Image (cartoon, rainbow, N blue to C red; front, side):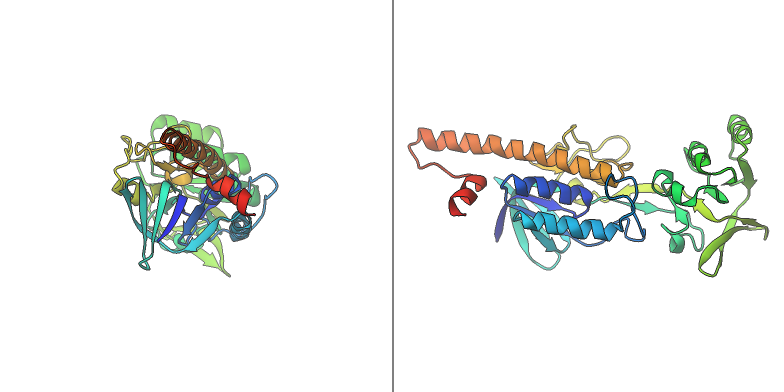
Length: 322
């Protein structure tokens, strides 16, 4: 069984950024990646300084190479179970492999629950979008729509309004409060009330939204505020505390209620963009390494007082064997 300082579960921007920091600190780190990133359907990522417009998978490929160049290990596989095994943790993979680590960092992200509208998921990240800050510039000044009916959808529509003068807010009948209707009208956001039947696609592009009564509202792109669902089953299985909204809680550095387990990225922050998740992974890695240093100090003091030979840290060992 392989033994590591840190096992990172999830190979997205948060996980790879953390692994990079830890590998550069001389830690034995492994990244377990199932290979199913949330933004896989997107052709490009945006808002990431120096990497704006890069295909998401290209960012991950470069990140993997960087981690491996410092001695980090990438394991393609799915972690199906985590459990405490004092003084560390065991990671069970779907193919039967088992890893052991002193600490865990979970960066398994989220998935999006979309409205049950025929054709919606097929167009996801193409001309059906969830984040105006990620995609708004690419569809600016076009005929846009926002699918409402959920909490916060009206405010979401006001944000999307920044990118177009032709915006339609679709909502089921009798849901809008009078104040909301006034706000939409004041900003020239058209309101269409009714049940959406399907999306109208022509030549592999969105051209309209068809209502149950047969009326078609021409649109070039739609924004959908999805319901974010955390992929946090592994954290829950370890007994990590959750808040009243069902999200795993962490301290500012990403530590969960289990003192040996950290979490970073969308799995604990649904609104984190790629660059935000990468930063959270880096911050968690720095905190993790500091926690491991505390262990190293305690072990060294124990060995010193017992007259035992000095136990080398991973970093010292690498220097002496290189």
